[in-house]
Length: 409
Image 1 (tube, one colour):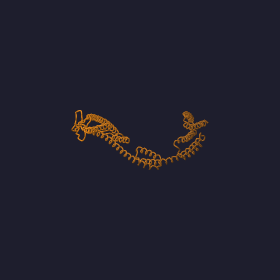
Image 2 (cartoon, helix red, strand yellow):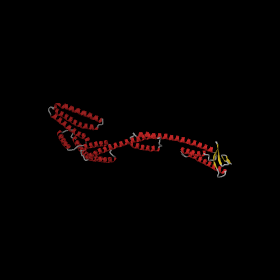
Image 3 (cartoon, one colour):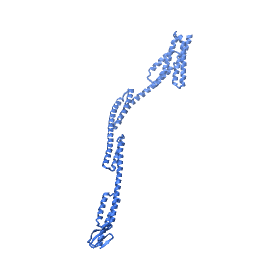
């Protein structure tokens, strides 16, 4: 009989292994010596040791599933329980039990990790849904659309939840996207309709602008162009492919009209400037008739000057009051001289001569006061106008005084 610390072979060739529960039959050996039998079954034991070592390494260092790990452990355990090896089988059972504990621990850890990942995925998807529902009401069509597409990519990268939860969240997410797409489609459909209406309006405005471009009715046409521009702005923008062409035609028609008007106005302004120069010369010639010493000669000279005045065309509007005022001042002086002459030669005028002289003197004094006031206020134009009127009044006063002398004579 042969033996070692973990097993023995009896005289019949039966091999035994020692365990905590006593000896267990390993098998029968008839092909060789007892030592060879023990060596054979010891090698089988070493094979189990190696197999358990490899399984331990896989469990610790790979992502071997708990199911596969437990199945492998059970397979080895069946071999250990079959007692077909000689060695410390109890030690192998202990290692297998510890390996089971490790697998269970890893399973719980993975379960907890999956639970955490699932909760994180749930929160992430809920946040995506919340943001998508906010974007669904946005009018920032381009930015919101790009963001929703990015949210879809993020959703696809997240792990699935349980079917019920995942389906509910996806339904909300998909509904938000659909709502945004529907609103965007309606917006651009409405925008297209508005732009088409704007195109029709602007086509009409362009047609009228082009029809008016050769008009010479300067004032009303310019006013109508201003109205057309206001209507153009109020119409809104047409489609991009039409807007620029319509604007170029509209603006081009206006340019034709206003260029023609500017040319005519420039010619008119030059003519009126020349007319002003001529009238200023006549006004200066008329003013040289003052003070009036020979009424008949002054009257004839002013009539001749006025006839030449009437042959001259318009002057610039802003210069008209001043130059005409100068002529009117001379005309009033002649009229007042005529009235004075009539009163002097009229028998009834003698009684009123002194009163007229007093009135003229009061008027002269008043004008002098007004001139001083205008000068003090810095109103040179008014002062000059009053001085020309004063010259006429002074001439009348001088004539009235002369008339009084004549009456006195």
